[in-house]
Image 1 (cartoon, rainbow, N blue to C red):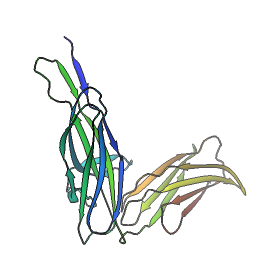
Image 2 (image 1 turned 60 degrees about the vertical axis):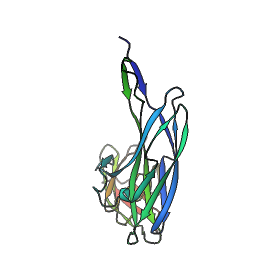
Image 3 (image 1 turned 45 degrees about the vertical axis):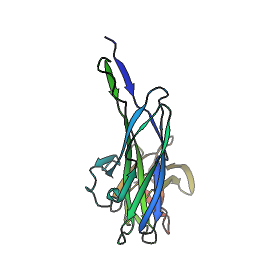
Image 4 (image 1 turned 135 degrees about the horizontal axis):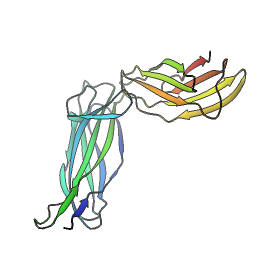
Length: 239
């Protein structure tokens, strides 16, 4: 028996939405395209709450589950529609920001597509496609940025564990630079791309120092730029 596999490919832009606005109503438009040139797709659009686990991996939750979520403030129009082969459509996302809101909030908007129902005689395996747009909302004039290096540990195998804590009322996406000093000489330098830290949470960066052997007396310096008034710096001497 021949089984026909139909999967859905959705192309969505932008893949991240960042909004800075005063309380009130603000709208944004998102474009979604059916990447299949031969089959139409039924698309539903909906929000979820999300947070990060200790390893920085995203976890999804029902709307209204988490503090800091703006999912309940979002209205999507249209929330369900059909896209023809290769067809593109603009979706309007409206946020109604309450007057008492302060700081930063976040949500995710999912675009989920499934193939249309086929005739009963067609042996069919359907694979749904889902694309998520991470959404960040900053209430203008109410957010402040503050962070702290909570700890630095150096392991014998040249691994640096750097712990950074978000102490402000919005998300942070810090960039981290680090280098090794041997006396007055800098013998190594590298960087880590930014990753989101939610308010009141911390992130432990596990940094592997490659190509050189860390020795007694070396100093490892870490610089954390979180977008605030100052750049944090920590120093750890190898004992």
